[in-house]
Image (cartoon, rainbow, N blue to C red; front, side, top):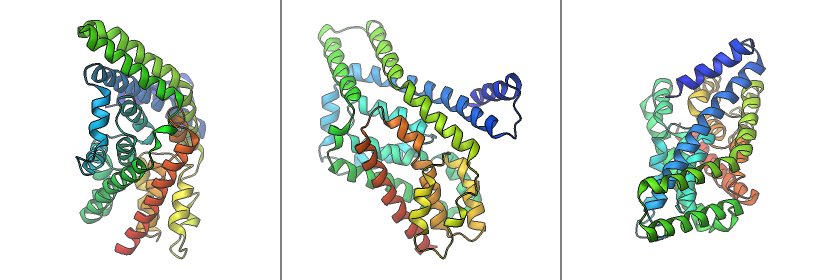
Length: 325
C-alpha cells in the first residue's frame, strides 16, 4: 500500500543525497522520510473521516452508549479485534487513536485498539506462521487480542479522561459545538466540508512538532541501535529476563514484521520463546517515539499509566509463554 512512499524515500536518500545504503545515517534518514509521509497521510485521512462522522452522529450519544455496561465488556474486545486488521506500527496507530478520542469514544476502548494494532496484523501473523508454526501463531494472536482487551478494560476503570491534555479537551468542545451548528442549521454535506477540512488541518498543525520529533527518535534508534545489543540480558538462566527484556525493548522501535526475524534469531540462540516474544511486544507495543506522539493528547501521568499497565500485561504474557513452551 505504501510502496510508493518507500520509493520516494529511497530516491531522496540514495540518489539525491547520495548516501550509502549501508550507512547508519542513510537507514535513519530513510526511516524518517518514509514514516513522516506515511503517518501524516494516515493522520489527515483519519481525522478528516472522523470529522465527517462527528458532524452527523451525536458525540455524546456515542460516548454514553459505549460507556454503559450494556455490551458487557465486548466493546473492548471489538476494539482489540479491530486493531488486528489494521497493519500499523505503534506510531501509525496513534492517528486512529486521536481520531477515536476526538470522536468521543471512551479512553479504555481506544486503548484496547492502541495496544493490539501494532502487535497483531496479517503481516505479523503470516510471518509468525512461517517462522514458528500454527500452534504458536494461534496462541500469540489470542494473547495479543486479550492483552488489548484486558488493558483497555483495566485502564477504563481508572477514569483517566481528566489526564487528557487541554488541547484534546478543546478539540472535543469544538467538535460538539460544530455538530450542534450542523444539526441546528441542517447544513448540506458540501457546506460542512470546509469546516471539517479546517478542523483537520488545525489538529495536524498542533500535532506536527510531536509527530516529527517522535519519528526522528525512531529513525535514530532504527539506524543506530544494533539488533543484538540487548541479547546478553535475555538468557534463559535469568529469572528476571522477561521484565528486563520488556523494559529494554522500549528504546528500540520497529513494527512486528521488522522485529520478527530478530525474534527467530533470539529463539535459535536458546532464548526462551516467551522472553523473546515479550521483547518483541515491548519493541512494537511500547516505544519512545510513540510516547512523544501521545504527549500531544495525554499528560505524562496518563502516558506513564498506559505504558505501565501494558508493560505488566506483556510481562505476564511472556511468563505464560515460557510456561506453555
